Amino acid sequence: MFNTDTLLLYFPAIILLFTLEIILTACRSDDVQWTRTLAVCNLIVNFSWVTLLLVMVSNPNLFNPEFAPTIARTYNYSLTTATAILYFIGYSIVLAVVITNIIDTFTGFSNCKFKKKRDSF
Image (spheres, rainbow, N blue to C red):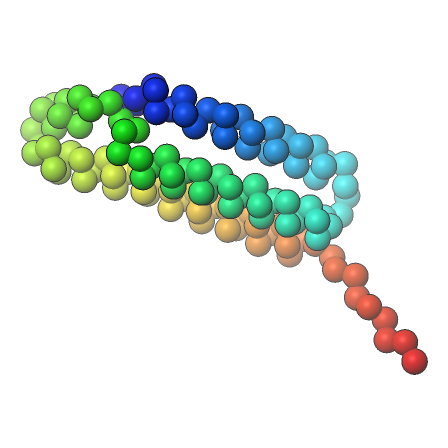
């Protein structure tokens, strides 16, 4: 289904983002209250995941070259229809991840209490 050589190109970035996500989760569990720095770090990690996912889905070499013709033969579709369905599924997953990350980022900033500067005379 997937081209393993192409997937291995993304492996270091995936490991880096998993590591950042674990560090961020550890920081969130230590702090009772979200801080601005924590919310910004959460935004950066979420943006990085979305960017990586978009790059991966946009790569034409992601799938094995025989996968789309096999799907087309199995379900009696034309090759262009099978390819369009695969792209639709991929970009639907990206859209779901984007919406989830936007909600997570918004929640992080809304849980963050900003310090207000006092007026001095």
